[in-house]
Every structure is written in C-alpha cells, then in structure tokens.
Length: 289
Length: 159
Image (cartoon, rainbow over all chains, first blue to last red; front, side, top):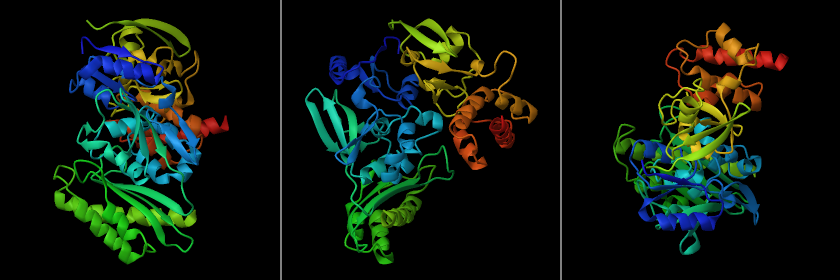
C-alpha cells in the first residue's frame, strides 16, 4: 500500500487511459465498501485506485426509452429513494436494500456489488431477473453484456483487463409485470444470504404468464439464471402446479457448498421454497399492474 | 513512497486542509490530522457504524471513505451536533433515558439517528431498529437507544 496512487478522473476516456496505463496494478474504486476493506486487509495491493465517482456517466438514474439507465457507481440509497424506479422494479429494490446498513448503502453501488463477484450478492439475482444489460467500457470501446454473464466465479468476472461497467440498462416494463427478491437469512438485517431468489414475470390480459426470468443466489459459485424455472411458468396461469415445477427446476439447478450458513441439502431444499415465495409475490405485483 | 496530496474538506462548516496519503481513511483524517476525536473507529470494515458521519448530507461509515475522496466535500460529525449552550434533543434524551453506557457507539448512533429524523420525523420503533441496524452497541441491548430516539423524535415534532 506504500506506493499506492489515487486518481479521480472526470471522464470515461481518462479513466480508461488510467486503467490501461496501470496494467495489472489498476483497480476501480466505486463506493469502496468492499474495495477499501480488501485494500486495508491487504487482500488486494493495487498500485493505482481509479475513483470513478466523479464521472457523470457512472452516476444517477435516468429514464431512457421507457426504461431506466442506472450509473454503475450510483449509491444504493439513491436507488432506494427513487420513487419511480422503486415502483417499476420493487424486486430490484428489495435486493439493493439488503446490500448492507444505511451507511454502507450510502456508498455501495450495484456495479460494485456485481464486480465484487460474491455468489451471495443480494442485488445481483433481481437484476439478472430484470433482464438488465451492463454497458462496459474499456480499451476496445463500449460493449453491452447481460448481467448474468459478468460473474464467472467467486471474485472473478468476465471483464477484460482495463474494462469497467459504466451503467445498467433496465428494459421498458410491459403492463402486468412484477418482480420480487427474497433471501433466507437467520436475521433480517446485516447478514449474508443462505439462499436468494429473484423472479420477474409478465402476464397477458387473461393472466397467462408470457415471460419470466428466475435467478438464484448463494447456491452455486455464481448467481444463476435458471431458464428451466422460467420455462415452467411461461404459458401457465402461475398456478400451484406451475409453481411446484418451477421450484423443482430451481432445486435441480443448485450446486451449493456446505458452510456455516447452511448445508448443501438445506440450501437446495430452501432454494425451492424461497423461489416459490418470490414468484408468488411477483405474481401478485404483476396482477396489480 | 506513496504520493501525498492536499485535501481540503469542510467539517461542521469549517474548512480544513491536510496532507493525506492515498490509503488514508476519512476517519483517520478526522481523528489524527484534524484532532476531531468524537468520531470513533470500531471495526474498520463498515460493520459497526461507530465511525458514522454525514458526507455531503449522506450517512456513511468514515472508515470506508478515503480522505482523498472527501476532497472538496462537506462532512458533518458529532462535534457539530450541539450548539454552544444546548445539546441536541437526541443527545439530551440519550442522557436522560440512559441510551448509552460505555459511549463508544454513541457518536455514530446519534449521527445516524439524526439522519433518520431528518427524513422521517415520526418513525416507528421498527423503522428505527432497521435504520440503526448498521450501528452496533454491546452495552445497552438497544432498547434504551430506541426509546431515546423515539423520545427525541416526539420532542422535536412538538418543537
């Protein structure tokens, strides 16, 4: 840490140039709630911290093409306090609200929660379920990738050297859509998920599910998008039988470890329960829209 | 050697300047450079809330902010809470209702509680408990803290 340098560029180009110039020694600093802990415990030893919070594209929530664009370094509390975003994506907010204390949420961002690449990150499953796309900038220019493609393993992402996430695009929401995120923890606050489930679904005028996405957290090395679980809902009225098929698909997708938070068997069983409850709430919300 | 840089920060309305290292935290700047030791450092990992301050009006853990990130910004700490002759209603109610014992968590809790009452002057007990979930206290068992915040809120609504 003795030869650490800190820069806070004000443009994307400047940030990309700084990261490119630092090679392996560069590290992006967003809210810092993970990075500074890793830095001070000497788990990471970057030569350069690039604070991206002064770059306009990284900050704030904008409406775009009927959806939303959220700057990757926007503090979680800003999302929680955004009435319109909260009304459209209550499930995303349920995940964001669990990132940590109010103090942590005053700094932590969804870009950071994603790039920290914890299997148990609470904002990631609902953002995957939402079908959000990450805009990524790097030496090769801009590209866009589905959020489920970012985390490749614990503390590993698919971002290439010198790349960083600029923002997330949340698509326009069709009528009769709803989402929900639920997690299982022994306590209601300040805890790490044993299992997390994000569900987003859309109904037609007759109440038949026309689109669904189901994502699970803390039950595999990465958060998962479980296509079979979504397929179990599409084309149904999300009745008891469909929900049970979805829960079965969730259990089948789990590849958990046993640790102090729960055994493999417990995680697999409760993944089905939590996913089902999240789907039921998403369904109620979709019916109300 | 790490390159030091000048950091200009407004704390409780007064402007300060200090020479900071890149890895230095805001709580370290406050306590060891500016000698504002009211803000306490507990866990240094953002889990205990003892170092809570307001940064540009947002409640944060000052152990998870670099001093350099605070350059040009405004910080409010416990030292700015009371006026010359009057304690803040939160401070007075904490004293009257025994909302503290050893006192290490108290500055952080007062800062966090004031931030809550600024956005919600009439919080429920549950709302207070959730808002203060990031502030650990190993002495009181929390009940007296919650009661102190509720009493202060009631007093402030009447004021």
